Amino acid sequence: MIKKGLKMIASITGGLILFTAISGIVFVNFSPELGAKPNKKQTEDRAKTSHYKEGKFLNQEPTKTNFSLKDTWNFFKKKMANKAIVEPKNEIEVVKLSKNMFKNTPDSLQRITWLGHSTTLIEIDGKTIITDPMFSSSPSPIPGVVGKRFSKEMPITIEDLPEIDIVLISHDHYDHLDRKTIKELDRKTKKYIMPLGVDAHLTKWGINPNKIEVLDWSQSTLYANIKFSCTPGQHFSGCGLKSCNTLWCSWVIQAPSAKLFFSGDSGYGPHFKTIGKQYGPFDLALIECGQYDESFSQIHMMPEESVQAAIDIKTKLMLPIHWGSFALSLHDWNDPVIRAKKAANSLDLELTTPRIGESIYLNTAKLPKDIWWLN
View 1 (spheres, rainbow, N blue to C red):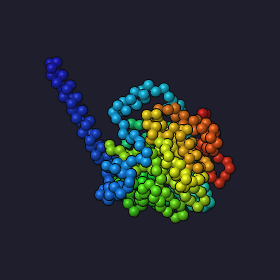
View 2 (cartoon, one colour):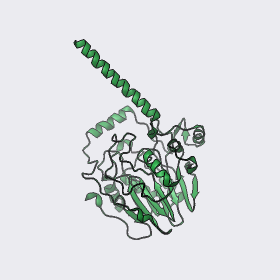
View 3 (cartoon, rainbow, N blue to C red):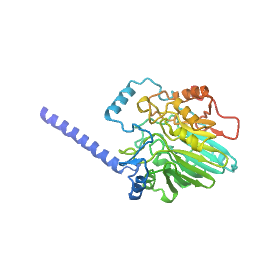
View 4 (cartoon, rainbow, N blue to C red):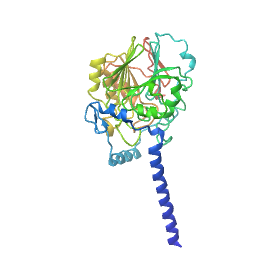
């Protein structure tokens, strides 16, 4: 009787393991959230660039982008022992936006609205640009696996957004490229601009390839009167099992009335000074500042490095992004802005710290600087 019971338990356990394995294989191979493999032309385009070797894109500086099982286990143990307050005690209250604010706006408007994490809405010289749009509640292909958004809702729904001229994408990690958001946003989007390889995901999701433009580092494109230049970052990529098979980047946005920099995700490196020499100075820099840890410091900056990067590119004003929405690392949720503010003060760099949903206007002397994260 006992033997029969043990056999039954073993059979059930084996069946569950087999079912889980098969489910995982099916999910990895067929889930649209994991994006797509490149087609023949996309593979050929990647092979033409000097920073693509043996099926992977490379950073300009030697960078650790592959993490072993030991690295993962050590991070997991660190997470279990972590005493940091990685999420705010209460849900963050965002500044609610109305679709009426986008009606009859003059071409002279220079308004940048932080929508949370790395998503910003840029209205400049009569055009509207959105960076790394991510409106979902969790930055994961399986909702709930990674922590939920700190706010109950976004400042505005996709439905209430104005018509978007450009969706600007820095790389394909889930907290920057979200299938659900892209598909919902597509009906009001005129054009997508992204680094090499990311287009494979969008075309798999049903986005018209004629709306997509793909650039390599050092390449530029002109949309109306605004120039977009693809510049390096120090990071990695991949929304499936394979990493670094699409390019990551930062962006220079040169409009007639102002020049902006969007860092995407990046570790600190000499590329920032190079960008400053070639494209600077800037009126505003949207700089990654959050989700860092010593174990992956080459691919995510510490707050003090974020401030130094802003100085390197020669910007007048820095807006810290990539914080305040999700817990993707082990630091206190408000540690990025506290440290960035201290570093900016010591280095005489002007920092603006809007609430999520709050706008800044470049052509005004008054900028959001409330210390709302301590309230």
